[in-house]
Length: 151
Ligand code: FES
Image 1: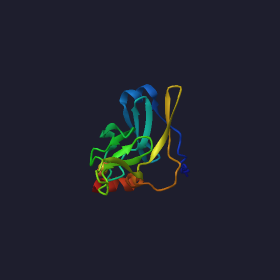
Image 2 (image 1 turned 120 degrees about the vertical axis):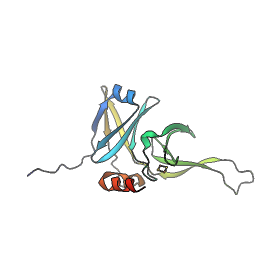
Image 3 (image 1 turned 180 degrees about the vertical axis):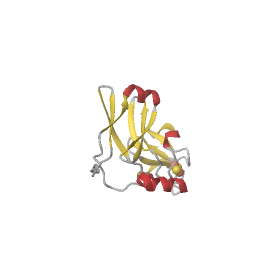
Image 4 (image 1 turned 180 degrees about the horizontal axis):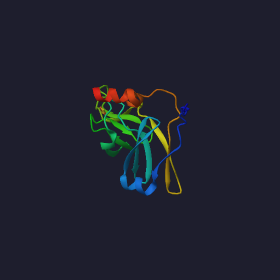
């Protein structure tokens, strides 16, 4: 009888540094989770591939610096998610102010991020160890595939 492997979270080898840099964006499936690996401004980031809001494909999103933080902009409804923390950011004005000025606000961490390390030109991803449920979990795995098909 074949023994079922327990998920360990990694770290998993995801590719050679040079190849990932050239690709800029790569998706790997690790333990049934689709993870987007991004190389931007000299740094690797890894986060869940599907936007926490409605499963949009983050790999097709633009990246911009917003309020001093690199964010990916989901192509589906333009939600902004910080690459390093998975925090959802939005700009708004406070109508209570006499002269409302647009400011950046946070909805909190919504997108699961993972840890990337590079050793001798090889890149590894350690899946998030947090057991707290995050919105982006909803669109992962077999069940998530069905949910993505609905929206
Ligand atoms: Fe990403 Fe709606 S699915 S903003």
